[in-house]
Amino acid sequence: MKSPLKILFLASEADPFIKIGGLGDVAGSLPPALKLLDPAIDIRLVLPFHGAIQRQAYDLRTEAAFEVPFHSGSIRAEALTMNYRGLPVYFIAGEPIAQDAPVYTPDAAFDAWKFTFFSIAALQLARELDWKPHILQANDWHTAVALYALRLNPGDTFQHTATILGLHNLPYMGFGAAPALDAFGIPPASDSALPAWAQHVPLPLGLLAADRIVTVSPNYAREILHPEFSSGLEDFLRLRASAISGILNGIDTQVWDPSQDLTLASQYSVADLESRVPNKTNLQIEFNLPVDPDVPIISLVSRMDPQKGVDLVPNALRQVAHLPWQAVILGTGMAELENVMHQLQEDFPDRVRAAIRFDSPLSHRIYAGSDLLLIPSRYEPCGLTQMIAMRYGCLPVARATGGLVDTIRDADTFNDGTGFLFNLPESLALANALERALSAYQDRAGWEQLQINAMHQDFSWQRSAKHYLRLYHSLSGNG
Ligand code: ADP
Image 1: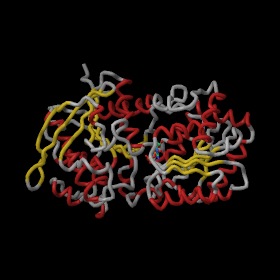
Image 2: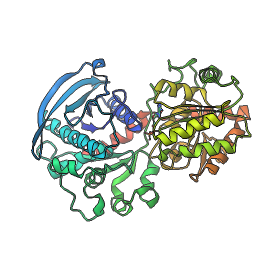
Image 3: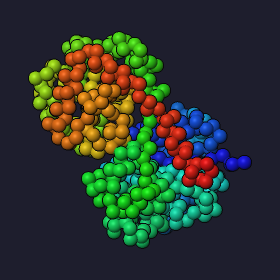
């Protein structure tokens, strides 16, 4: 009889414990979806015990306490555990995971110290528990180093472990980590396939060590082989091309379900789009905008970061200023971009509102109450907001890049369109797509059909989890 598949899943964040961005959505949704798909698998999620985790909300018990060696001694680590949706979750605590610091800081050395400690401690936890996983999946630079450390020293516990690096964002590589890597006894790579500048950087080390590299969309797996998206690693990644594939992220269809969503003024479904309207009215009232069900609401729910192309939005809106619309913006990030949004609100006091904060319930109300969501990303490994928006009957206006291409069908190109795509990362291209969308909005029956097309898409984790499970089985020689 085959032994049940054992999977160790490492991430720097996971919803609902702690979420900063899309990685948190994935790490919080994929492991439970895998467990649901095959209850026999033993999948365990390991997270740093960040200060922002609401520890009193969870029934945690200490599972293990151990020393993590580093050059001048060792650091005490403690693993606390609880059960979440059928699987064990471990939180690793220790001095480098400072309780008064945010999950990610601008201090590269500080973050490297935290996440290197975490990565090594997570491996050690499995050793302490004498639990031998078939699969180790690390995610992004924060935990990539675990794959490399395991390759250097698998020991008894990881002798038969196959490794996967989940790639959610290539350019964030963990630069500045060399002192932390040194401190924990992790030498630079000596493999000449990696460029010299990458040989002591966590993400490239993980890319080198992983048996398989899984990007969060099939299109991003292709894009990273090209200089525009490869962050200087195209030659190396091309050498690894046969190990690279993409599995599209899903969304948590329980959390994101307009028919059950209690944060909304009015629940609705694809069969009852009329009930969507009060959410729009409510959004206009909440933001003190003129109440009018016929004026399209354009929204933006995004990190304020150049990656997201949000700097293209003000000029694009100015270029379509002759058309009727209102705009609601939700986001935090770079102060400069936040200020741009404040300025936009000042320039259009009767129709633009900017909420500069992180506010999950508000994001739900925006997806349910607005008509168009702008996603002008310069690159987008997968993107979740377009999938959420479509499920809520809000159509994306997005740049044709990464996972946005895998998930959105342009309404002017396909009969069963679900959104509006544009190619160049320029405000004029965004404005043109927006103009097409605003014109489509004027045809009410046509628009409703687009909403129906979008809401019928299956973006569930069940679909993605099947692909991951197949990969896990094939790698473990178990399938
Ligand atoms: P990324 O992970 O690159 O930021 P994704 O599209 O993959 O982008 O995921 C973003 C997630 O974060 C979505 O769930 C989105 O709703 C949420 N989000 C982004 N900004 C905010 C905000 N200011 N308030 C609430 N939720 C936000």
